Image (cartoon, rainbow, N blue to C red):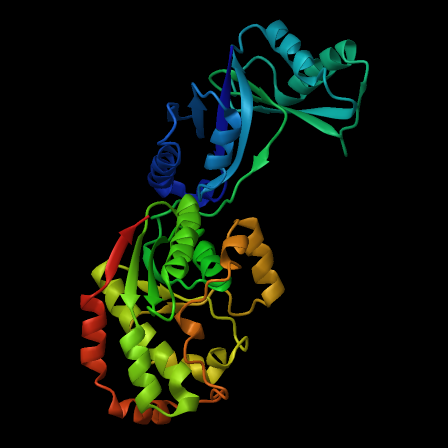
Length: 381
């Protein structure tokens, strides 16, 4: 008998003949999440198991962040041959609880001599006999003892919900426009949750934004990587482009043109890191550069699809997710990014593509982009 951590998946069950590919990828991601711990991790009989750990809390916390994991529990693993031992273990595990309970048995081994209802009844009787503070309630119990009969017997009480989704890397790669704000980390998280690997680009306007602003963005990238795995962050020097736009373009179009440059650069960097799409944290109508017309003006300059998972979210919804993934407090640190530099007083809210193109005619667009890309700093998180 030993303590073990059992890792369960959800949506991968639906993958049919492709299930082994997704399972092996999920196993790899769990191992990566636990690379700093001296533990054993393996896949057996539709479950991933972790053993030889010292602190179960740290292991569970790390595994719960792995995309593709549905739930995690700390279980007792024991022989299934002597059911009397299982009864004793069940009673011991439930002895510290009070109120109501039920037993939820799952017999994966269909050759086992007891079926699930029989296991429920026998273990329930053993618990009632040895735990006077408990009584049975099969509909809305306060406590549930879970039992799985596989190659061995596994008993556990507490189930920790994990992030779900699909294993990182199972659905391609995308380039995230990562700012220092609340929205873009949430957007990256939501797309990554569907199995998309991330790389990120951040536009850095030194000296108008300082090292603390860049460090803040890298901290946000680290939070994202705790869910999605390793990622590269491309730090793009953006001051010269912003100065040129500010000096040569109509004031009300400067924010829009800045966004068009960002999208062009992101599109090219995405190709260099084999990303098939671009992710932004835009929510329709939230600010002047996120109206329907403005989004059309920025999308037209790129070839790759643009994913906007927050497009229909209100700010409160976005903040709630940011708090759930632990990015909110970092996003709220008072270090601004390039989007706050040279902000016009009256930005255009219904821009036209032809006027945006006309406003850009005084800029050496191609050379500005090439110079910015040639000076990119790449940081691995």
